[in-house]
Image 1 (tube, rainbow, N blue to C red):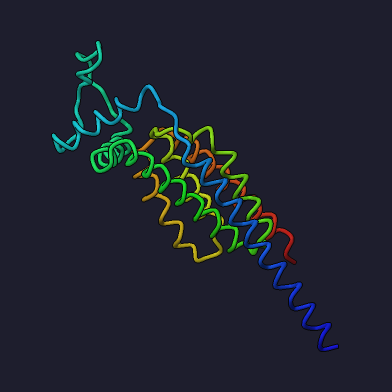
Image 2 (image 1 turned 60 degrees about the horizontal axis):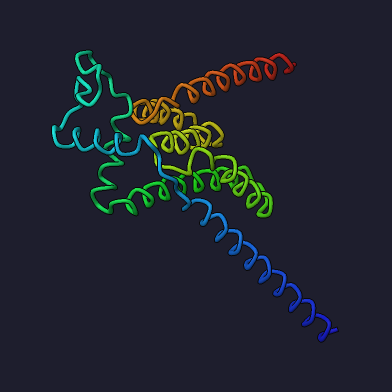
Length: 212
């Protein structure tokens, strides 16, 4: 029996080792997917706008690079462009890729933590993380302001799905205050928030009506 127990423990250790190797292999594949970055025609415009904003310490009222430079212009992505310019100034092209990777890792950390709080098992959690990378790849294979909407949306879902005190919802106005200056995807986040609020009220009323 002792020998059999040792064999069982060895088998379990081997299974754990195999699981770790598989996770590492999948992680490397996902890292290769995430680091793939294609050139975008709007990239250098965003970097230049960020440079101008940082140099002038304010958002310009006119787009001096456009033929409509005589019309007032509202740059709703100025925070994203500042981040892109700073990343480029610090590391040129690789700096922009590093910025994108940090955003992706932040998004994945929020998804992983949210799934863990929901007590999703490890295997399912790994699968969902992989699906998250695959599903967001079209938005993350270049450096554009929309990459910040991906992490902001993940943050919104993390807040809404958290099983904590209601004061966590106070983070939502702060999130949207930043999001609205990073990318126009905040509109989608606002729609999801509205649906969540309505459904929460419906379920709460239904639960209260079922009580004796």
